[in-house]
Image (cartoon, rainbow, N blue to C red):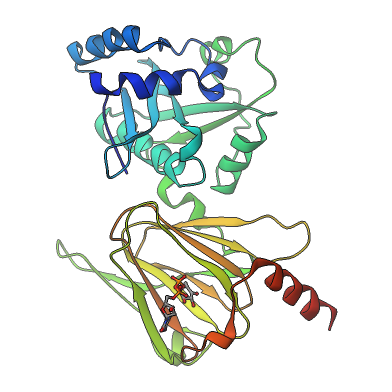
Length: 317
Ligand code: T46
């Protein structure tokens, strides 16, 4: 996926997005809701060479969402960020990628110092999304002008990111995901010639490596996995691109947890029977796996109910 400027050919798809519940929740978004008005709105953005409004598009240039920065305040170089994705683009990583790209836009292209956004506490899906990605709600008072724009809405949770925050890795500041360790792979930077990452068999991993496999040439949006292993231990990492990994430990009442692998120096050590699903956020991203044993189909649990039963049984024993 990527962000690009809005063009008049987007008017039709944008009109549908503007009528969505998420868009309706935003006060004074300024977006007209029918295609004809949107076309003139888009023309006016083009005339202003506006960069504050961008669409999220798939690698096939299909419109998946909208990112925009509003109410830029000169005093503290801040702005308010909104990310809206169409319903069919949910759970495919577009919202997370859109948020990251929106922050890049704010800090790298528009030179802002601080970006705010808020969600209604009752919007459980959105609250879960930000918490899951490691963003903490703001404790400090938010600027008066900002708060005033949202008066009349339900109780709001505010978030803020500063220019120098490590927002890309905010999710990686967690130590584990679904009880599986997030591992820092040793990485040696080379001046203007990239970086070299390595791990050494019995020194860096709690198992002997018997097999290495990698998954490549996957189109954007494709999903793989949907299974767990009974015994196999693995280190998963993404040396190129961006892949979302979803893990589920099968325990009663537990939540599925997600992490975006987009940093060659980060690995996930899966050393227990955990259900896994992988979503390719960018085409051609590569997933590499170092495994503790040879390939054997008998170690797979490829049916979710069998996996849950298996977990219930080992907990009982
Ligand atoms: C895992 C996730 C992260 C082999 O013949 N040898 C191998 O070493 C592997 C891994 C697979 N295969 C065969 C089995 C299937 O016929 O390759 C085919 C595709 O495997 P699968 O559908 O299991 O691929 P993914 O991407 O769903 O899962 C893979 C691993 O299989 C799995 O262990 O944890 O990556």
